[in-house]
Image: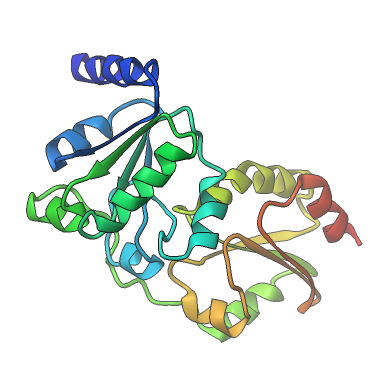
Length: 230
């Protein structure tokens, strides 16, 4: 508790100064600061790299795909600390500089990146080679009820996390009328390619097994209910 309090005081002291703070930290400091209340962890590697192992609770936005990166970053809180990492520190260093220059108040980059993190025996999640959904299994989802809403998302995707309460609200308000099925876009890349799903989140509505609507990005509850009710 004392350590968390000390870290919180440290972060608060940085946030009260100007301009925005951006610095490189070693794995020990990085791990300590992950305990800060409200901290955001950002993995700027590719989705494939992320899938092969990542730091717990990390969001993912590929720095090398600038359109995707900026789209996902807009859903993060600029007032809260951001801990950034990549494979070795190069990409994340550039991303950290960009974040600091674009309104994020506290940004810390992991020296040596995920490679050094593993060398120092820090905790890692993922990399379990979960089998992908087959097209037959996916088609079974689309006919599981008369009206099916498929959510292509991922736990590491900032806009996907923003949609979670909206989807929960829609599912509750339309209970018995629709079926909501989630497809992990971080794992099921083959299905995404077959269905031309280019980004996360993407929502597809099926009625009696036929696709009738799809949309990429943030969608309001009102729009989803309207499309599901047609």
